[in-house]
Amino acid sequence: MIISLAFALASCNDRTAAPVVPDALNFGLNKTVFIGTTRQLNEAGEYGIDRATSLQLLQATVSIPPQRAIGSVSDGFDKPKPERDFVIAELAKFADGPSFANSLQTKINAGKSRDVTVFVHGFNNSFSDAAFRMVQLAHDLEIPGAHVSYAWPSRGNPLGYEYDRDSALFARDGLADLLRAIRSAGQPNIVLVAHSMGGALVMETLRQLDIAEPGWAARNIGSIILISPDINVDVFRSQMAHLQSVPERFVVIVSRKDAVLRVSSRLRGVESQLGNIANASDVSDLPIIILDVTEFSDHRSANHFIAGGSPALIQLLRRSSDLDRGFLRGRPGSTVVLSGQRRVVSRSGAAPSTPRSGTDP
Image 1 (tube, rainbow, N blue to C red):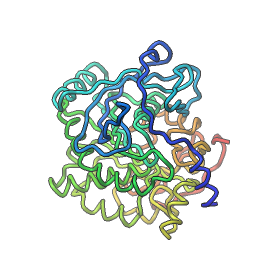
Image 2: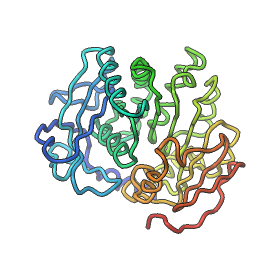
Image 3: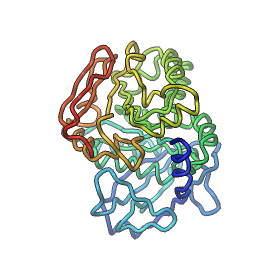
């Protein structure tokens, strides 16, 4: 199974192109996303795979194509079609941190929510992927407030896992600088969302910040949501131990059907990673909430991004007040299992069985 999945991944396109297409403004729904990146500009004038020595701060307008399926992100790579694909229609660079913070604060003040959702992508992503996924999540899940994407220098190639793992470590300082810049924009409520290897990057960054300034994470981050985190459970426990305290809400979204993390686990010689944890009681002593979405499916991602790709789960989360305050409520140390329109909470941390009605096919 591991070999066949690896071959399937290897057949994917190399997602490194990040063209700006101004005509896309005339096609779909236009959404603003702020971007922090530690990617280097390449010869094509795009943010490619090389690592930059300092954080770059940007603002983009992304065009969402009409008639798209909920949960889907279509990328035309170097030749996007605005009527079919997500497209970067505008991209501007801020001169410095204060100008970024001023623009972000203006965006926050213009809305009804002071939330700033920061999305940190995972392995095998391009600059465009990072922006598109933040916009897709914000639109499909109806996430309020302002939206920021951190585009760290992934190779955007399924065979670039080791490069990406090194890049995630390299990108810690850039993410720390981005979080500080966001906090300077009128003290907003930061919701930090990370997927897969991005979860490891987030935890390493928060560990680094808390070692330098004990309590930084809890004082400055309102909520943390790790989606399918590609983190060894022992490593995660060590990272948590270096946080003086954790944000008010800390949620880990898991699925035991995650085929990508199954491969990651077997390559490491362990039973599971945090994102497909076999027994949630192993972390029930930690001040986190496990959100078990095993009953849902997202075949496009091999069940590795169910929270953003499952139409049924997206509709269920939409019916909550918002991504951060609905089904993600729970007592630290508990497991929340979602199935159709039901929610089952286990205080012990063990995942109870639930009916399959109302789930994705």
